[in-house]
Structure formats: C-alpha cells, structure tokens
Image (cartoon, rainbow, N blue to C red; front, side, top):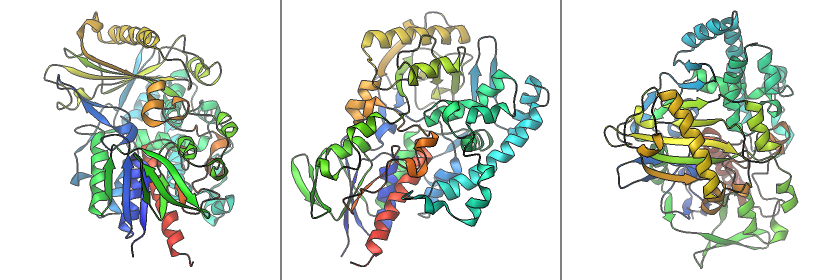
Amino acid sequence: MKNKIAVIGSGFSGLSASAYLAKAGNEVHVFEKHEQPGGRARQFSTQQGYVFDMGPSWYWMPDIIESFFADFGYKISDFFELISLNPQFEMIFSQEKISVPESLGELKILFEQIEKGAGLQLEKFMRSAKFKYEVGMQDFVNKPCHNWSEFISPKITKSALRLDLLTNFRTYVAKYFKSEKLRTLMEFPVIFLGASPKHIPALYSLMNYGGYALGTHYPMGGFYQLVLAMKKVAESQGANFHFDKTVESINTDSGKVRSLTINGNIYEFDAVIASSDYHHTETLLNKEYRNYSEAYWQNRTFAPSSLIYYLGIDQTIPNLQHHTLFFENDLDEHIDSIYGEKKWPDKPLFYTCCPSKTDNTVAPHGKENLFLLMPLATGINDGEFTREKYLTEMLSRIERLTGITDLRSKIEYKRSYCASDFVSDYNAYGGNAYGLANTLGQTAVLKPKIRNKRLKNLFYTGQLTVPGPGVPPSIISGKIAANEIIKLQQEKP
C-alpha cells in the first residue's frame, strides 16, 4: 500500500520534494495557502497587460536546475526557452558603469582594462571557484547535515584547504584584486546569501563561477515558467496539488505526526514535509515537539527583507539593461543598516530588473515591465510613506542613468511589497525575503535541522534549513528531504 505524504507549501523546495516522493511511489498531496504554486516565485498579471514575477529573477547555476529535470527524464527545453543574457548585467557606480559580458573571456579582457594584471587574477580566481563549485554543489550541498561525520570522506578531506572554509569572502577577494570596483563586482553575488562579505566563507566564491562563468539566463515568459515546469514534473509522477488550503495545525500522537488540520478539516498522513517557513511550521506544533525555542530564532542571523516595487511604465526606457545594479553608494554602509543598526538605509543600493528588454510577453508593446528591489533589515517598520520615499530615490537614480525625466508620471501600474507583506503572505520570520544568512556559524550542520528531533516522520525543507537560500539550493533541499523520508520507509519497523 502506498504511503500517504503531505507537503506543506509549493515553493521550489516543496515542488522538488513532491516530485521525488511521487516518483518513489508515494501518494503525495501538496497543500498551498495561495491560489497558485510557487511561493515567493509567484506571478501576477494586471489589467493593463503587464506580467510580473514576484520574487526570483536571477537564473544562475543552470546545470543544477537542469539536473532536477534530468532526474525525471526531461530537459528544460521540454518546458520553456532559456535565453543567455548578454550583457549579464550592468553595475552602476557614481562615476562609471561596468557591463558584465556573457563570455568569461571577454570578462577577463574587461578586468585587465580596469586593473593591470586583473585578467590573469580573474582566471586564477575562477579556476579555484570552479573547483569549489564542483565539490560544493556535488558533495557538500546534498548532505542532510545530521552530523559532521557526513563530511568525512577522502575527497572532502583532501579538498578541505582548497575550499577556504575558514577565510572570509572579503579577505579572499582582496587577495586577487586591488580595484575597489572589481572587488565590489566580485563580492556582489554573495549578497544573495544574506550577509556581509566579511562574514561569509570564501567557499562561496562558487557563486561567482555559478553566475559569471556559467552565465545569467532568463526563461521566456518569466521565472514563473520554472515553477510551472516543476509542477508538471511532479504531477507527471502522480503528485496532487491543493490550492487555497491553509494548514492550521500538525497533530501528533505517540512520537509521530498523525494528521493535519487544513481549513478546519482533519486529514491523516504517514509523513509530512514542511516547505513552509520553518519557524511558522513549528508554531503549528505543541511546544514540546518543536526543534527550537523563540530565543533560538531571535539569535539567528537572517538574510535581508526587501522593499520591492512592481511598475508598469507607459513608454520604453533607454539605456537600461535586463539586470542593473545601482551601486553608487557604499556597500558596507548599506549592509550595516541591515545587520548593525537595523534601520532604513541613508544611502541605499538597489537592483532593477526590466524583463521586457528580453521578453515582449511581459509588457504591452512600447512599454516596460520594471521590478525594483532594495535589501532591508528584517523586522523593520515599512509604512506606505516610507516606501514611497525610497521609490522616489530609486526613480531619480534611474532617471540619471537613462536620461528620462519625470519617470513617476510614466507609471501606469504600481504595487509595493515589503517586510510586512512577506509576513502576511509567507509567514516569513521577521519578514525575511531569503531565509537564513549563510554565515560560517549557520552553515551545514549548524543550520536548523531538516528532521524533527521528536517526531520521526516530520521533515523540513527550504531556505531556512540545508543547504540554504536561493533557487538551486531550495530545489536541492526538497530532494534531500524527500530522500530522508524514502530512507525512513526502507527501515525495518
């Protein structure tokens, strides 16, 4: 008889877990509180004809994503067209801008133009980053991280020094490059990991390889195409999806989860994987069955929240790339406002995505789809007046770059999204947007456990557990959690 398994939430980790569990012959039911799958990667359309991806927009590590589909006999091209962006993105400084080319060879030439000898240094950096990527993304991230003994293997032991686990990323980058602009360019990818480069292990230079070397891509139709494709894969294996279903409690008996209360009704299951916010999931349990206390969560270092604006612009915007990073101000000053003073930044950095530069299906002809994102401290007060103040700041800097005047008057659709929205929509602890920061003290075994310590059939997946934040890690997290249940099923009673 098939085991009946519930997956709470249909973000990337939940989609992944449901597909692997169904492939293993289980009866899988995915419960999603919203009316569509995707979690933070949902998509919405407007009456004016704009189509907005709500969350992820950087398609990096394409090989990791491709491997998910390969596990089920599919290719990405079976579901959507993937475009390689050239340039990958632009980074705007106070006096100049750097446009990152698609080709690593061209990037090497660019580095050499900015700093004599930096081309060769980039080659050395990427050679080391490729090694970290191959070891990290194949051996490190696929561990359930129950204990450190999982990392005792000849390959990992032999590789330990070359992985630079104990060197911080900023110090590591500074060994290669003197130019402040080049250092900023190399440090930028780890911001996705949710902490200052001073507090992230140099191991994560693998992000530079996964991005700059493997390229920045875009799925035509928007990032949501990846959500729809993964859902189709899960359904092809037999997984069942249920929308507008809120899990209200996890019910236990004799050291096991026995059932879930969903929209007031009780449903029995043999095992549960929670792809929902880890802290929120634990509030659905009686206190004696929770892995962690409130004090534990209060002492974690969370990745940032974000102020996001979805804007429909009633004209084309010249001189703006698909991805643009506005880094005219000091990176450390902005980071300190997130992790130190926990306040709105005085001189913010921000990011824009204009997918209509690549995809004519996401905005009406002659108009632009504009996504703005500014990283923020968690738990911050995010009233509408403050949001609008920072929108004005961001628009003025876009105007300086593009030569457009009075961009605000060209807005025909506007929606803001910030910390309190992450709480209401995703039960995100403190309104975090990305999960837990990948600091050394919150890496691998030191992350919240993927398995409940007191309930043998309850598991957790997603950006608050292993391997960490980001789309590819979340997909891997779902596979890890699914494999843990499959192993449990194989154990003798």
